[in-house]
Length: 256
Length: 265
Image (cartoon, rainbow over all chains, first blue to last red; front, side):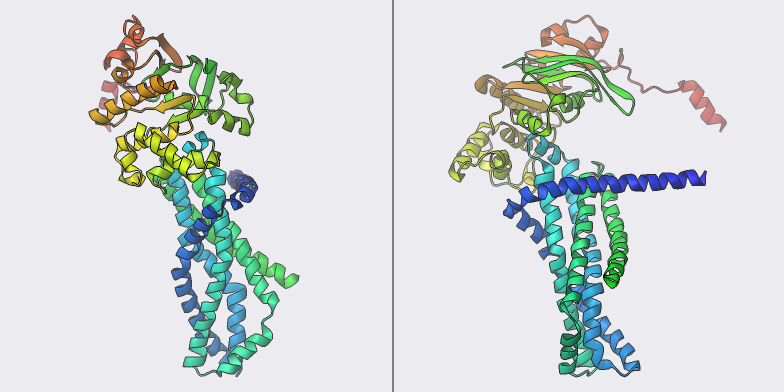
């Protein structure tokens, strides 16, 4: 009995994953045509990116400050406070910036995407497009997906920069680590490879979060309750998937 | 014959919606599809516009079997159709002008002055040229439907489909919509399909009518023929009687028995 329901859950999970992957393939097929519509795409990058700036910058500053405080505490025990710059930079670039940005993105931009598309579905706007012989995948879904994928690494980059500033604020200004040592240590030991790791991560998270948000909205039940449920699912699914993918990617980078 | 539905069957999750429907829409006429709520009138429109395909039977639009068309061909067929949705279905992130311009921008490369001219002409036809700059949220129900009508005719379709165009309108807006439907048909020669349960409003404008009930066409003919019908089901619907073949009560166990059982608990 319990075995049967466990099978059911696995079966349902695989079925869903398959449905999402088919949706991704359909979306990707529409992405090239939607690149030819820069106005739509820029609007969506603005929606997903520029409108998330405040929350990303604020969070980046605080995460960086905490990193400065905790890092200083820890490094001081080994008498190596001058490594604070390196520690903060590596922590932000490779881990905190991509992950925290993705989680914030899911909560801020992802939910907005899902509820917007879900409401368009509920008010027949998507059907109206279909009848007007305009593919809503191309006009509505693809630009929003692409906009999210493009915005995510940019947001993560801004998160890192502001975060470093926050760490410097605490480490150098408050705790008295030498400013020159802080930055030069960072310059010496952080390479392009570390930066690329973060960029790859945030690109993958961008694809995952945008895909989930657009998919949930596009396939939401066309009712008030349905759109609400889809929005919740977007946040929950995005958060879990981002953390899972983060582990997988980190392990892959360490191996490779 | 523009639209031809032959012996169509359709079921959702094992529950039959249509069991053998025949319906013909002739060019240049207003065809009314009437029926009580929940009889699948909107589903019939989805069948005609190839959003769903019949389980059995055939749906032909402009002489082509819609079930055999590729998605590109379906879009080609749809470009010859215009559809007015119950709530208008205007795109909420653009103003009235852009809503009407939307199909033109998507399907043509016309220069901006020409698009402007085209859109203003269509807005003038529905009396809303002055509302071009408003957003959909600022429109009343009747205005939204008229904007949607302007959008539906902007590409000069051969067939115009109206889904419940009279629902929830005040008497003035209702009269306006009614006149517009007639006008689109007589002045522009657009073949029209009007789906509604407002018998009186339809009777004054329809050339042909079909009455949908219980998954079948219960009656067809001119509105006058339908009114003179001696079938109890048709008469009940046309006169709006509570009792008749369509029962007022949803199927339930015996009233007294159920009340008694409630007392005993």
